[in-house]
Amino acid sequence: MDTKQQLLNHLLEEDWIKTPRIIEAFRSIDRKDFVQDETKLLAYFDEALSIGSNQTISQPSVVAFMLEELNPQEGERILDVGAGSGWTSALLAVIVGPRGKVIALDIVSKVVKFGTKNLSKYNFIKRGIVEYICQDADIGYKAKAPFDRILVSAALPNRKLPDAWKEQLRIEGKIVVPYRDCIWVLTKKSEQEFEEKEYPGFVFVPFV
Image (cartoon, rainbow, N blue to C red):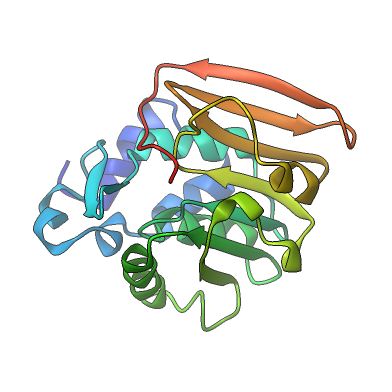
């Protein structure tokens, strides 16, 4: 695939994306703006690409699947864990719109610098829709909690969610998080109860 439109057509034809606001996000945000110079020719391939520091920009079909499961809405507040290149944060920014908020977290300072530079191409940080913060994501971001949704783009080492994520998610909010080769979707039903679904067959970089 050589163009953004060809990638979008692929995601639509393979039924990875169905929701109008998610489709619009993929139409508005160019993945080529979030990859390294040496991989720009591969930007529209449906595969993960290295962004350095042992991190990747995720495969488009996987991101589409996770966003569909996350089901973000206009005006919502979202925690984007392992934001990396900033691509998922940009997609989320389009979906939540100017009344929403995306808190992007990554622990690798070099990656945060890269992601911040990429997001600046769309003015999401300047407009106050996205904040990109370099810190340990295990503690969440209490200053902007509660969150309507939490998206995690790196695989947890075990099946235990950090307590901060569970506490900082509102009731009926969702967490979409990889664990080993599965995508795990959790809906918060009460302060202590989460409804769980698992979808196997995926590959992610490990959570740092």
